Image (tube, rainbow, N blue to C red; front, side, top):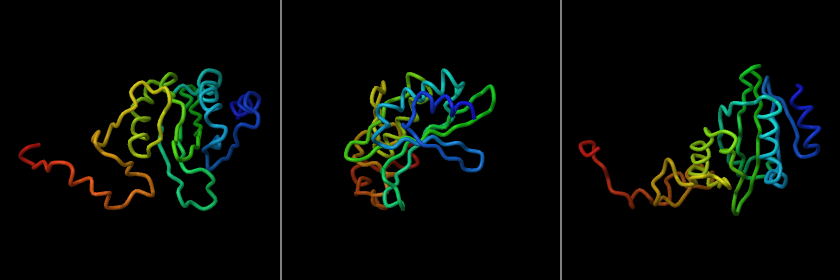
Length: 167
């Protein structure tokens, strides 16, 4: 895949690759991600033709066998001219999981980054509007983290009940 040659030439040693079925993955550990993520994604967009951010989601690897980093944000990119896809997996860790925002590259990342922040607590530095998008603003936790209790922390009792007739 020619785009991997471009990435290896520009970002040698900053990432590893893997393939599963027909999916090519570019993986960056938490130490290298803050400095390399944005330039690497910009290269994929501007030089390699991956012009469409198809998906952006989060993963919590708490208690996952052999995992070295806690949180992962997955960027699913598509080259609309060739149909090629690549998944870039960027890792970050506690106590303050942070990654650079990609809203400057893809405006569609705006709400997707807000969702990852809301559900996992990963902040995106440079995001124009980093606030909750799914949960109420008063909500204190991040419900898709694996250490979040199945029944919550009792937040439900802090919010008024809305009946069907009122909704």
